Length: 360
Ligand code: NAD
Ligand code: ZN
Image (cartoon, rainbow, N blue to C red; front, side):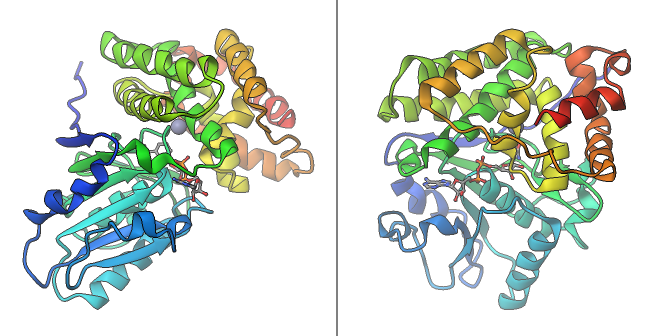
């Protein structure tokens, strides 16, 4: 048996206002004057001077705005990399992603693709990346995915939705400033936060569970409950806690695995472009059979916060479309194995998945 030996984020700063330390953090990382820092920023912040004016820009440094309306695709990652290479003779000193899971994943992927030849689609999988990335920094502005700690960057490519999982993927530095969560719309706050809640439930009830995952998962779950069950509104304390819940949730699945909700949500996302957070909620809402207690508590949280969970996504799909979703879901073997054990195929048949998708 071989045990996972995975890298962790080596440096992290936490605190309200810690974003102001970015200049100091980056200073020593500039490789030379011609080698810029490139800031990939969620375009929701365009014109929001309270954030943008605090990005420490020097000489050739550049801000590139990216929309988070769609999840990252390999073609977009390649295009951003090509633009950077065309514009600058020197390899950038660093890539800094500012935004949610979408922008964090772009930052990781672009940083990797600046030092690895070809298309990002060539590296979708496990440990295919050959060369270390350029220095990269993650600065979350919405919490839940755990992308700030994970060793993957999830990309939709020509053939599959799959991450670039590698030891070079994790950020070199993360800045956790809960102040940056101001302005997140309520439904989105819920969907992305529930990604974390679902990570915990899937990790803690899975067959891959071990003391490492459990210790992080239990802490994260406690924090989620404080944020979503005990509080009526989003205050500073709940922002701080959700940011740490996301971190611990990510650490929990690093040494275990996700489960049924993620496997099925990947199917929705691949076929319909449903975003990760909301897709997980749509699926999890229907999973009483697999996660009875988690789903009950989830439904309480939905009601407490008056959240809309979209319904009827699959009502007009063709047989072929159902088959595509089912193929994607079934291909995620470790997720099923974690959720249901080695003989998961006894429970999870194509018909079973079809009938579950039909309810969504
Ligand atoms: P997101 O980055 O897609 O953002 C969701 C929405 O919130 C967007 O409209 C964005 O503009 C908005 N937003 C973000 N911060 C805001 C702020 N402070 N104020 C106002 N609006 C704000 O959301 P997400 O749920 O964090 O990320 C989803 C993505 O993360 C998916 O692409 C998924 O595949 C990926 N993901 C990656 C990992 C990983 O380990 N790499 C894990 C889970 C999910
Ligand atoms: Zn997730």
